[in-house]
Image 1 (cartoon, one colour):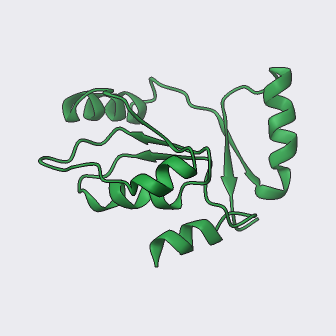
Image 2 (tube, rainbow, N blue to C red):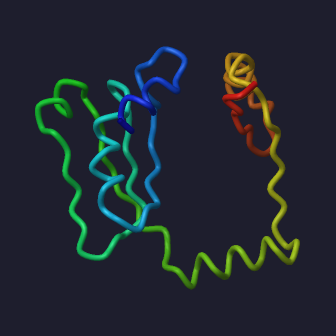
Image 3 (cartoon, one colour):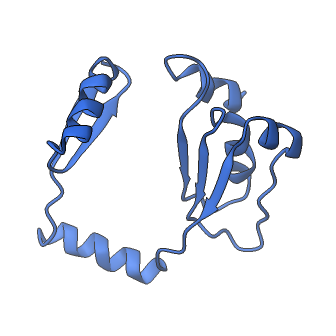
Length: 124
């Protein structure tokens, strides 16, 4: 049960605050509105051909889920961006931290003290 598995992977069992969908088929789009936490956001970026975004209306309204879309380019744009990164033309500093450090990450974000990105490792 993917929906329950995703929700259970979060510390409080409510699911992620946001979901960024880059899938190339329809099913993940249908599941995301179910496993995102109340007041969570589902962001659709992937554009599977002929797919429909289906969400349970009652649960989506009761949970106040926001569903958004973002057109950020095409496959050629993505391939070019990856090639720039591969050639070392893009530097993306990041730091891997455990979930136990999440509160301090938020504190650093509020203070404007983060350069780059923090990646949460659920195994830490």
